[in-house]
Image 1 (spheres, rainbow, N blue to C red):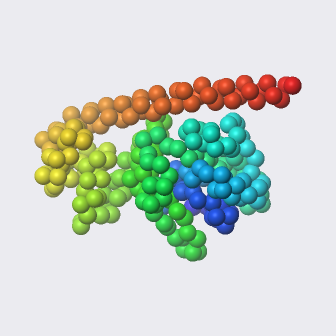
Image 2 (cartoon, rainbow, N blue to C red):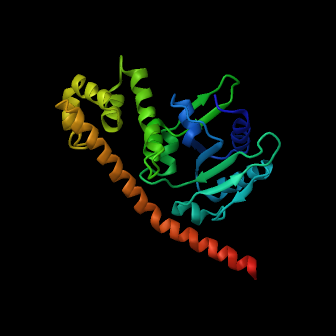
Image 3 (cartoon, helix red, strand yellow):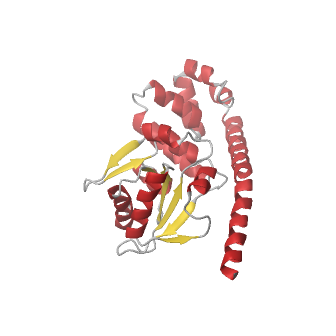
Length: 253
């Protein structure tokens, strides 16, 4: 279960009809890979009407913006995150992080079509990124995200390994980061794994049950993905610095 202050933040956003999907640590809770966080991270449909609905929700939450850039479509569409801290009763100190574009992840309309809806024991519903999209969104330069990716995929494997769908087998072959589980899946679904080698070459090591080589290949795969994420964020960080300078200049006038 997620904590009640975050429930209030998310229910307020839902009440205002904001089209958004939960991601980050809170979404991981629903998928059985618990991660404690006082943040609520959402990916937003970036259009003027939806942004207006979000602003109404933020007003009710008495949310104060932290950092730059401002909550505007161009910044969101460029890939920037916009950060707020809630102040309304029952939500004090909860941080709300908002994005509309995620590296390596499809545009919002496709994410919405693949979303997963969860319901808690009190009947509250939560629209979240689908599991495969959540895993892709977690492939960042931050070291803390990679153990979470492993737990997300492991949890899905453990829950469904007795009678998986074809889609789940492909998902595990593409995304498992646990050596023994990856070897198990490659052994059990050898023909599928052989076809998947073209997409993920390290599966050849899983097929040959080379545990040491597979462990090293998984580390190299992670390093390469973190490098790509770092390259993606480098120009955006330069833009953030420009936003900061502009804000300082405007307040000094």
